[in-house]
Each structure stands twice: as C-alpha cells, then as structure tokens.
Image (cartoon, rainbow, N blue to C red; front, top):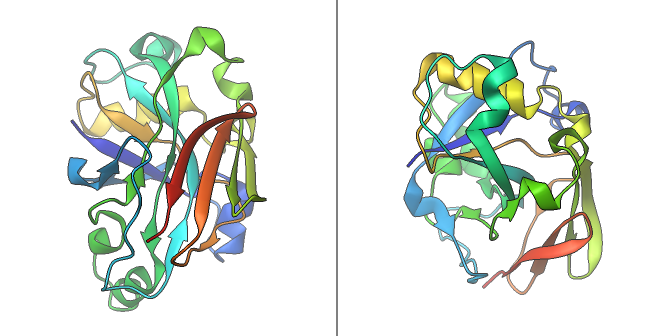
Amino acid sequence: MKIICIGRNYVEHARELNHPVPAEPIFFLKPDSSLLRKNRPFYYPDFSQEIHYEAEIVVRICKTGKYIEEKLAPTYYDSVAIGIDFTARDVQQRAKEKGLPWTKAKGFDGSAPISPFIPLSELPPIDRIGFHLTVNGQAVQRGNTGEMIFPVDRLISDISRYMTLKTGDLIFTGTPSGVGPVKVGDRLEVYIEGRKMLWCEIK
C-alpha cells in the first residue's frame, strides 16, 4: 500500500510558503508506518522543533490501474477520508537548503493521522467537498476540493503514468492555506462537510 501526497495543490497555500504555483502535479510518498489511526495521540518527535499541520482530503483507490484516462478516473475510487500531513518544517528546510530529499521531514512515524472513510454516495460531488481543521477549538484551515489546482481525477491520471495504482493506495490531495505549528497539549479536530471525522492530541 502506497501513500501518495500531493504538494502545492491550492494556490493560497503555495503562496503562503513562497512557492510558485505548479504547472503539473507534484507528489511524494509516505511509508505505511506514517499512518496514525483511531484518533491516537501524536507524540512530538525529538528531531524537530517545528511540526506543522496540513489538513487534506484523502482518496482511497478501489481497483488497480495504470495509465488511467482522466475520464475513467472516477471508477478507481469510491470513498474519501480526512487526514493530516504532519511536516517537520525545520528538517524540511535544512534538506532543501542542501538540495537533499526531504523524506525525513514528511515520512516519519505517525506523520499521517487519518479518519475513517466515507462513501462518496454520502457526500457532495468530489469537486465540492468542504473541510476544515481546528486547533484548540479555533478554525485555522478551511478548504474545498473545488479550489484544487489539479482535481482528483487529474491527479489519478497523472500519478498512474508514473506508478501503478493498487487497491488500498491512498492519495493525500493537498492542503489549503492556513498551515501552522503545533505544540504539546494542542488538540486538533478535522471535519468533512461539518462532520467531525478526526481528532488528535499532541503529546
């Protein structure tokens, strides 16, 4: 099972990090050991002093495919979840400055909390799903899949050009603006269409 994460898929998020808006999808991978399920707490790692939250809609692939046409992409997923892409921003920045890969900043254990999945039949169309994240009860991120630079079907088509998508693979589809740091004692809650799907305490 692969965890494929999309970078800079919302214009305002790219701008808040002073990155150019991409001309094609950017993606990277997390290992399955990064998944954090069942609202388990996130333990702040000792190798970073700057862990940031990034709330994202997550799509689960339901059948194997390669070179998937965009028009056929909707047949390759049938449910979504909400997830958090925790990023060790200081580790990432040091790697970038040296021109090195930044897998350590994204793929560490517990860096991908994820909610249960919801069938698409229970939600608005895939390009109209709203979501938001709160920290200690205050909303800090709000997004809608309609604001994506590259919609889900385009992502699936593009990714499948480079690697076969298999049943159970997860796609973290990118985060809107409003990312920021967490600290020990914080409680994060993430919602899809106003429905609380995921919560995570920082310890």
